[in-house]
Length: 175
Image 1: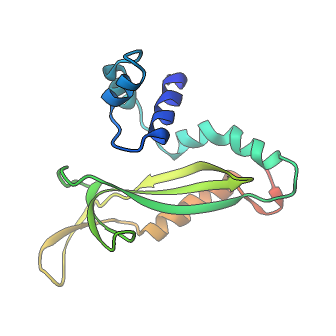
Image 2 (image 1 turned 60 degrees about the vertical axis):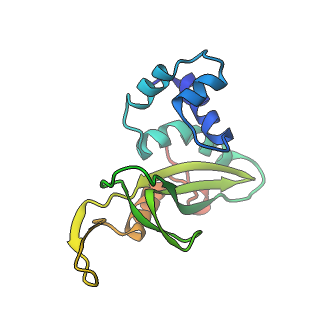
């Protein structure tokens, strides 16, 4: 994995106030990185919580060992990246958006952040996947549902955080 390209891409995502595209990043760096290189990079691997943990583990350990006695905490959250024009599939689907008070079509991402001393570090994430099809009792229409609830997914993510010694009692540390 090209660590420099990952850093550049991550910075671009965090600093953007609008839609992000490979072409937009290429234009921002004045063509120094081609949009094709960015697209190939994004399609080159499976980005998951395991890979994320490999990247952020040293940062979390550094925060844990910082002086001051303050303990870190885990923050759980979910967000929906709207995709109104994309065809429905197991990932792009209809989800209730609490911030808007209505159902929207998009990608539902659940995440866990480690927070300490004003620093937030993402330590785990999952996409909500609606892989099963059932018949809606009210409407009689078929709809997609997840095999696991978000609550079940969060509990599994938190179990992994404990296994990785993230924000554990008494600041116990593992490798």
